[in-house]
Amino acid sequence: MGSPSTSPQTYLRISDMLADWPWQRRLNPHYEEVAAEGDAWLRSFLALTPKSQRAFATIKASLMAALVYPDVSRDQLRTCVDFLNVFFLVEEYTDVEDAEGVRRIVEVCTDALRNPSKSRPDGEVVLGELMRQFWDRGRRTVHDETGKPFVDSAIDFFNAVLVQAEARDSGRVLTTDEYVAIRIDDIGVRPMYALGGAFLAIPDALYDDALLTKMMHLGCEIITIDNDIVSYNRERANGNADFNIVTIAMHHHGLNLDDTVRSLVEKNARLEAQYMQCMREFCSTLERRGGADETASIRGYLDHMGNVRRGLWSWSFECGRYFGDRGSTYAKTQMVPLVPEITRDTSLRENQVDILLMEEELAKL
Image 1 (tube, rainbow, N blue to C red):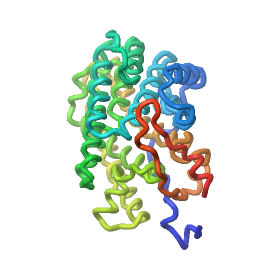
Image 2 (cartoon, rainbow, N blue to C red):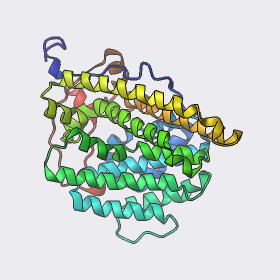
Image 3 (tube, rainbow, N blue to C red):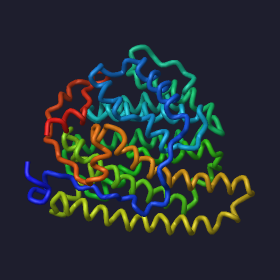
């Protein structure tokens, strides 16, 4: 393998895209205890083969929860851990399905989330009972047990996963605008925002505010670019890179990998500036929006939104999903060796699905 200077296309360059982001890394103090509890609950369903379970464990969804929700109570953190574990499993199950298979999974997950007290039918995909149990327990930890903004955003996520599958089946390369329109919902950030709001008793009407809506859209797009850059190596190896903004930008703009990533980093800096301006404008109106308690809750929600990005970025390098056990090294060197595309058996579905273990692939280089 050539050096980075002579063979730049053998490496993915990842700069510190959050260098100017005001929110810093924080970890929920209940992390270790709740992680063990939540992960044991997920394993009890035998939703994966032993091999894929080992790969799934490197996601460390519980770590993501503790980084994204550093201030919530112990019981609320358990809700966050279950939420992320189940949603990651939905992703793994749907990535290998055609649109019709994804539609069936989406219908099950939507019904289970809307009706957490209803027993699931025998023979149904295990995601139904996982989703039901998650929200039946989780809704008791939010301010309003209906959790309507969270449920609505989660269903939007499921529907966007279906749209992604339809796009995948078409074999057509999406335009950047088409891709972003889907990714705004299927990146999963809106449910993260909404769950934080449910813990803080944010009034539902606030979600219709024009400035806050713009901030949420910008936040989702910013995190999409963050995530698509750090996940590009894994998705390329896994054969899923067609649904990634790096691949799409290279295709439409005729740029190499380095120049594409550089242009996306520059775009994110512009989006970040817009986000911060929107937040300043929104904060200038806070005193007119309600009493002291409501204002404090809204400020807490704004802090949560900002922390979501920081938490996800930190998690990307601390889990094993994208960089195996080398995340801290790559965060320092900002150079990630590209692994070759592997052949995965996509005929294995549901609890037999084959999940890529990046640590093994990186070790082969």
